[in-house]
Every structure is written in C-alpha cells, then in structure tokens.
Length: 508
Image 1 (cartoon, rainbow, N blue to C red):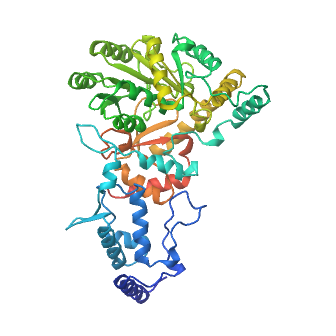
Image 2 (cartoon, one colour; image 1 turned 180 degrees about the vertical axis):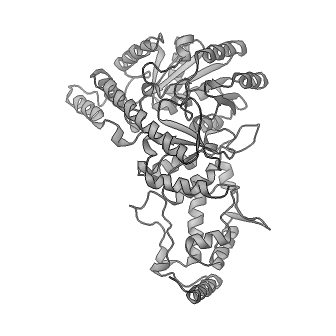
C-alpha cells in the first residue's frame, strides 16, 4: 500500500509535470484510454510517451468526441476523478484547464467543469422538435454498439446475440444459391425487389389477415431504408410527425434530418395515450404517426384492439397516415394479444413495414414495406432515385430461407429461449429494486425504471466496457430519464448486474 509520504511525493511530482508539461509517464503510471470493448485492439494513444496530464486530456477528449460525455454534461469533480484514476488533483486541474483552452470544456465558477457544445458539434447535430429545441443525438448508442464486441456485457443491444441465431440457415441458403445455374449473382435486380420473395411475403401477410398483392410490396435495405423512403415522400421542413414517447430512437434522427418536427406521444401498456394523441394532433396536424403495434420498442407491449380501432378513427378524422413498424413480428408468440393496424385498415391509411434482421442476421439487410397500389408505385420510384435496386442476392437468400421449411422452427426456439431469459432477467432486475413497465410478456426487451439518471449509469458503464441503453435516447425530447431498456438475451451477466447494483446504491 502506498504510504502518505509516497503519495505526497507523487502529488508533488505530478504538479511539477503539470507545471512544465514535460516528464514522460512510466508504464506503471499509464492511464487506460482505450474504448470499452476494444481491449483486443492496440491502444490508439501512445500512453508511455505522454505525461499524466496529456494522458488524462486525451482520455477526456476521446470520450467527448465519441459523445460519451455529451454537450452540457457536468464532468466528474476534480476530487472524484483524481480518486478514480489514482492521480493527484493537480493533474486533473491541469488537464481540465487544457480542455477548456482546446474548447472541449467550460468552467463554471462554484459549479465545476462542463462539456461545451462546439461549433462543429452543433452543425452536425440533428435538429430537434420545436417544443423543446433540444438536439437529437442518437450517435452515442449507435457507435457504442459497434465498439462493444461482447454481447453478455451489452444489455443495451438491439439485436439477439449471434449464438441465439441459426447461422446454418443463412449458410445453407448461400451454398444452395451458389450451386444454382445461371448468372443471378450478376443480376442488377428489379426496382420493387425479387418477385418470388414478394410472392412469399404476400402469403405471410395473408396469415396476418393483411390482403396484399406482390405489386404492393417494395423490398428495402432493412427498416431504415423504408423510413428513409417514407420521409422523403411525405415530409417537408416544418411538417409534424408523431412517434411514441418512448420509441425507437433512430427514426427520430431520420425524420428530423428531413426538417420535420418530431413530436412524442405518451405511451401506456395498451399503446399510445389517445387523449394526449388527439390534443397533439389538433395542435400540430401531423403528416405521419409511427407506431409499433406489436412488441413495441422499448416497452415490449402490444396495441389493444380497442385502441387500434380508435387510432384508425383519429387518422381518418384528422387526415394523417400511420406507419406500422412490425419488425418484431416473428418474435410474437401464437395466441399473444396482438392487433395489427394493417389488418384492420387493409393498407388504406397504413403503410406496413417488416424485416428479418432480428431473427436471422442484422447484416442481411432485407426489409420491405407494403402500401396501397398507388403509393407502392410512388415509393418504388423514390427508391430508384435514391438507391436504385436493392441487392437481389440477399433477397434470393432470404427467399430460400423462408421456403425451405426450417425458419418457423428456428423462431419457435428463439421465442422459447426468450421466455426463459425474460423471466430470469425480470427477477434479477426486480431484486435490484427496478420497477417494470406493465404489460411486458413477450419479445426481446424489458423497460425498467431505475429511479436514477440512466445517462449517468450508461456513461459509467461505458468506462467499464458495458453498453446500456438509457431512457433519454428513446424520447424525442432527449431529457434525462430514470428508464432503461434491457435486452433480455444479454442481461444476465453477473458482473453487469453487480455493476448496476453498485450504481443504484450511489446517492442520486
């Protein structure tokens, strides 16, 4: 254990190093600067060639650039950071002052140091909804998803871990496709997508009581491209688009990038709060309302039949379209109370979206939309102008997977495994004192109230290699939230649960 004298001498040396900006740090005094999940990669910072002040400055700068520490956030206090890093307060002060000079931080007398919103960040930030005038920033979680390579340490993931999926389904389809004669690998594809796949999707939609022809189906590169096509077609700067609050965060950014007002509608266990929805509709006259009617992300709830009927009535009365995102369709068990708006409306005012990224492979990137015949033609034209045809080889692979008879058994196994994991995760989180959102009985996610600012938990977790999904990301307002989304397939790690318990035990 370090003696008081040793600590005093070390603090004095740190101050000398700070004052003169020299003195290289020894290997024993090197700060860990790599991002979580990157421990298998070389350290991008030459720590052994830098002073402690330089190391700490670079540590903070990287996290601000990666938006771990976001504009307006208060940095750890000088005393706290010195204790956590095992360095002197003089070193922290000097590093913070350098970050102020570099434009990363601002000092507020009597309050501490805060992350400054720099001009470049402001220009890159996506415009927010007018009611709050806050910037929508979803990049943090998206970047972190790709940094994190360990699913068991990523309760904030939006996908199933690879070992939950059946890679042989896709591999077998690829091998079978390679053995087929012809030049289908070289084909440019067709604007609407591979016709046999669209015919197969028609059969699947008929099972959901959605009547559709292959001509009403347009293949897309995942759900994200479907949203992009819809945004380009319907939204102009200043138009209002309604989303759930909470809801899937990526679409906030996409609609806001089009210049739209992204307005949140409060959510209940039966779906959107219809009284609040009608007030918002009357005030803003939206063009679109986007909803997960089945296994809503992040609450895991499904739309009740009564609420679905009333929602369609409001769409008719106030003349807006509904975009129904059914990406979790195959994770919904048979017999689960699930009402799809497209089955009630038959694609008059509803545009239906689907994808297979949650059950097969995220990078297969095959999604689709189904719409009225006229709108399907219009959206196909938009697809041609923005990206030509989607890759037909991927669509052929999906067609083989869906028609060779093994896909249904695969999703049944996944649903069964999710049921077990959900029960275990719920018990573990409730034992920590978390409160569950009501009505969650299927799907990938649990939405839980921690009673703490989950931005702080996510930031602390990032330092330890854990990826959390804080509640602020799921709201258009981006306001601090006590809610957090947990992927039940990746939330059982004992180390993660101990870390979370430690965060919950800290004073709010």
